[in-house]
Length: 389
Ligand code: CAA
Image 1: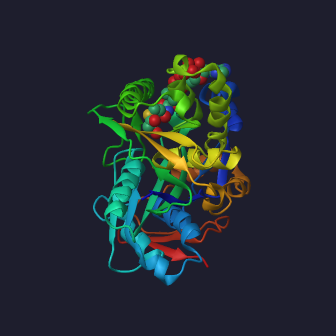
Image 2: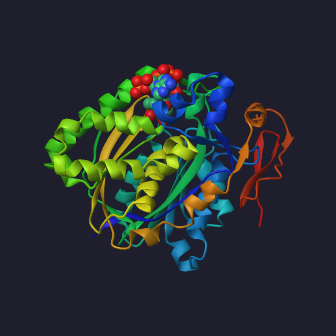
């Protein structure tokens, strides 16, 4: 019985910052951002979007036009985020209501930095293995915020990826080959009283690389796999250079004949991430969408997926592509990215400072946000969402 990702969709807010303009304003050579870090643009969040509304927007693309019978087969919503809106209540229960899903389900939030989306997916695979007629909705949604003029500023971003997990998946099946490891490390974290992440940038890159290298060695031994068994390696991409740094470590294991294909697929897998930025839990899955939309792969091609969450947790697993995998990517990610409105650096700084805190009441509006679901109001420490349609 094949189990895997049946369909997938992506949402990002409709504003962006040009990183060449940011570099000029910060007095940095633009090539540091464009080449050294590998980021060109970043999605900017209007006050009317947060991790829950973005998740609802991504999921609504997946669920529109589904029959009642199909919707009723969804037994769980697993909402993965490290920028959730509440320290106690799960973001998934907001999604259950916004998406008009049945009452008899589990609606749970999962957190382990950028790794949470992968854990949600693995949990979903296990559940569907035991309950083959059921489906699980997994949504990975985040706002990556480091602070104005911080070193991490160029690696911010925002967005959500939604996935349906089921048997007979139309996108890709899971190969039950995960290798994972975790270790209590302090490379990146966000204290309870802060909306911006704290990070030891260099250390975080070193740990990411070390985790990939160690996990790959164990994975290849345990699963008897070589680099040449894979059509592509897809990475969690906090910034696109990170994937290259990780893969370069196993360059000496790549057959000469395979080098071109892996490099082409690495580049295809970073096209959207270069323009959106980091979406933490969703970044690996945006990279998967980017690869599948921007290069032609074949039925049964095996894709290695490397998930990393600071703090730290890493996992390597593989997916095998279904025959019509392209039809299983719903919505039009390229169009969504291309139709965003550019904001100036001044406007971005204003929006960054206006990030709504729950301690004050707000009415939230943004004339440029035409997204389906929006955050309308914060009142008495409660977030109130609206359906814009
Ligand atoms: N032209 C071309 N390249 C240039 C250049 C120029 N003019 N100037 C500098 N560069 C290159 C540098 O050589 C460097 O490349 P290498 O790393 O390949 O040597 C690159 O640009 C970046 O330069 P710096 O290292 O000097 O950059 P920095 O110290 O200002 O910050 C950063 C970079 C550490 C990634 C910072 O943006 C940051 O802290 N980001 C957030 C943390 C992060 O994303 N960590 C990733 C791993 S953790 C993770 O994956 C979880 C997660 O999502 C957060």
